[in-house]
Image 1 (cartoon, rainbow, N blue to C red):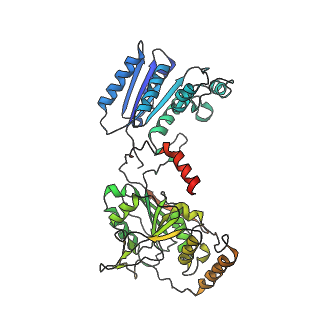
Image 2 (cartoon, rainbow, N blue to C red):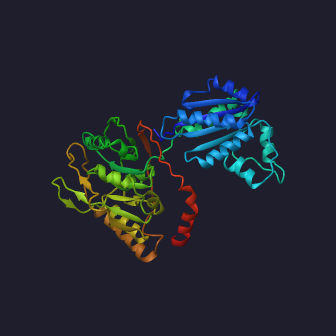
Amino acid sequence: MSYHIPIALLVFVQEGSTLEKFWKTFEKSEYFTDSLHPVVRSVSIKGDSSTLWNRAVQEYEASSTSSWSMLIVLTDVEEIQRFAVTMKLKRKEPTIVMRWWDEIPELEKSYRNRLVFNRYTGINFIRNKEQYDQNAMMPKGRLKLDNPVLLEQSVLLNNDSDMKMMRHTLLSISEPDRVDIFGQKKKNYGEIRLTVATHFYCNQENIDTIVDLLEHYSRYSKEVLEHIQFVIVDDGSPIEYDIPKFDMNLTWIKIDQDIRWNQSGAKNLCMLYARSNNVVISDVDHLFPEHTLEWLSKRNISHKRFYKLYRKRPDGTMTKGHPNLFYLSRARWFELYGMDEEFAGAYGAEDFRFVKNFKNHGTVQRYLPKRFYCEIRKVDREKSYHSLVRDLSFNTSVDTRKRMEADYFGADFGYSRSMFNYTWHILSDSRRQIPVLPPLDRTWRPRWLLRQLATLLCG
């Protein structure tokens, strides 16, 4: 499950208006479901709208049981719309203002109107195509409404299209994970901060090596697991197996072709399905302790750095990193064309050439602090591993040519840029069942200018 935000919906309608009639019908229809929102209040405006607004907001705040919730305000009354916009600016929690228009207004194109009716109003409901076209062709000096939602969609949605569109709009706002109006599954992975990726090839008896690894990870705390995705790539194993169920963010992919020593291809596929920029990738004989994953999930990796990790042996002693063990940026991986699949089909050299390519393009390699290590696992190499022969002979000449190309021809050579030379399918793509409440951060987006200045000065 993706992140989840408690929702409250306040509907303020002019007494006797089209919206009032629509909403009463909508609430009783099959398109209105409890999953849309836990708190709904419908207020009919007659008389002083400010008094009704203040009372409804106070009742909502008094009844709220969560630490915070997103407030959605739907209205056809301009004064209520302005109250809601003011509240949006003052309130630290998310607030979305939606306006229902019976007729397209001819508003002056002033700065204040642009803020109220466009910038701070998230949805402008327009009833029919004629009004939609009227808004699109607004004369000079008059305000064109942004963020329009055309309710009349009978060509695409047949009967009850206005109610279907209202449902679609509310679900799109309130539920990142859903089936949309066209039957398409929509998912959001904003809670993922770190991807832990590995791959395997097993031509022996079972896949216990992988299952035991995931069972170990599944025992980590929920605070750690809710922000981590695990990616497993089966590199064309010729054996059949069942995938156990884990309450984890787990993506399991299988390559259709049995390509010998396709480690570069398997790693590229791991990175393709990573849903965070921070990725730690390793072979199956390594395991990351909980404190290491927790620390990695709370930091943002520098784009032009990649890291090795110290390793702890089963006897407790420490040793240096491994050529196939990296903590790095997914964006940087694909910027430099991933791991060279020209080496696939024979053993070795792809990891060495990958590191050289990263360094040649200015990426700096360092070790993480020694306290954030990985552990060397004991795996059953007789029943749950592979029997491929390790012989560098076939790839030595390939690597020699690539070194020559980099030495003599420069940045555009020394790497084949060959990726995904196979087909694959997803065996499993599961999510944790406990939704995550995102942390509030109202300062990130307003700092966009500072980030652009940093890019101009340091980029």
